[in-house]
Image (tube, rainbow, N blue to C red; front, side, top):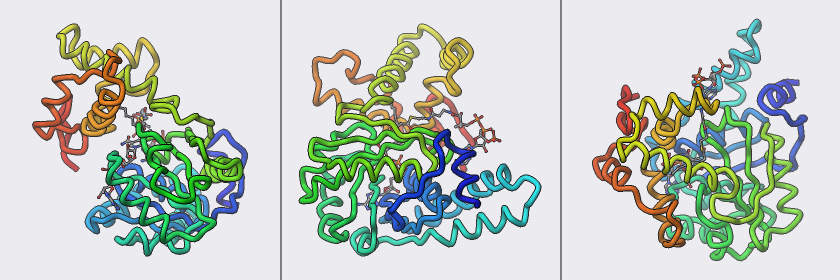
Amino acid sequence: MQFGIIARKFSSSATVQSAIKNVTIIGGGLMGSGIAQVAAQAGQNVILVDVNSDVLAKSQKSIGANLGRVAKKIYKDKPQDGEKFVAESMARIKTATDPAEASKSADLVVEAIVENIDIKHKLFKQLDEAAPQHAILASNTSSLSINEISSVVKRKDKFGGLHFFNPVPVMRLLEVVKGAETSEETYKSMMEWGKSVGKTCITCKDTPGFVVNRLLVPYICEAIRLYERGDASARDIDIAMKLGAGYPMGPLELADYVGLDTNKFILDGWHKKFPDQQLFKPIPLLNKLVAEGKLGVKTGEGFYKYEKK
Ligand SMILES: CCCCCCC[C@H](O)CC(=O)SCCNC(=O)CCNC(=O)[C@H](O)C(C)(C)COP(=O)([O-])OP(=O)([O-])OC[C@H]1O[C@@H](n2cnc3c(N)ncnc32)[C@H](O)[C@@H]1OP(=O)([O-])[O-]
Ligand SMILES: NC(=O)c1ccc[n+]([C@@H]2O[C@H](COP(=O)([O-])OP(=O)(O)OC[C@H]3O[C@@H](n4cnc5c(N)ncnc54)[C@H](O)[C@@H]3O)[C@@H](O)[C@H]2O)c1
């Protein structure tokens, strides 16, 4: 069966079926489009929502291209089966621009919008009103507190964190975050759903950056500071960490890949919350690049220059 094959290829976990069949994803950017893709590949009905319909058109295009890459690997010698897989997965993804309307038949709503607590609060209030009582609400936040995000909803027991990694179809980890009031049933459903979309799930407490970003953010920031001081060139820092520490990308390449605006959002938020923590102090070079609109791959320039897509 095709879903089984996909899960084995893309995750070390066994194939798991989830009771969650209808997933609404809010935010059709980098992360939301990837989450939509893995859910559709797993046979689930997906509604991908963005306030910007141009973003949705772009996301559908990139999901189609990325499903093609997946199909080429799985159906190497059967291109017709590959085409069918892409067409069937794409057909499971509907798009919409109204988050409340799109959540009315959801079993799970995953939020992947901008990393801003006020904007997330406004959205979750709407979702809490609109989604069916049984639906789980989850945030893909990189750095905000799940308890703080869920403070505006009534269903705190059905709220948690589902933190995916970029690029979602390739990265095998999913951090499942338990808030103070997340019920055991919700936690189990989130773990099961994560496995059903081919991810290896780990359990995280609601601590800043969970596991990966608590380690990764200071590492990337230290690399930017090292470059800012002129201790080594950007290229040499990246080569060092790839060849000397075995990372697939160097820290500055990764910062450009994630987006320097996202880097700054995270750092500013943590600095405000933990002003005495040296590791979270603002970085003038990062602020300068963001102010100049040099946000990394997505704008064609960050620490490096890129061809605009
Ligand atoms: C202040 C600090 C801020 C931190 C921010 C944290 C942000 C966040 O919360 C956490 C993160 O996400 S942290 C970020 C965590 N992320 C990281 O750390 C990423 C680190 N980087 C990597 O792991 C690799 O460089 C990549 C996988 C990105 C590209 O690999 P590569 O070798 O350089 O280039 P390649 O040859 O092109 O691709 C290789 C294979 O992948 C396949 N493929 C690619 N994209 C695909 C897609 N969208 N769909 C489907 N498939 C896709 C491709 O087909 C190929 O398959 P094959 O079977 O080999 O032919
Ligand atoms: N970029 C990463 O590597 C990464 C990795 C893991 C988690 N995250 C987290 O995922 C979230 C999204 O990040 P991204 O990189 O995909 O951002 P992005 O900027 O690529 O996409 C966000 C999308 O949300 C849309 N949006 C904003 N407000 C909305 C609303 N109220 N309703 C519907 N759509 C709305 C925007 O139009 C935009 O298209 C953030 O919380 C981020 O911290 C990012």
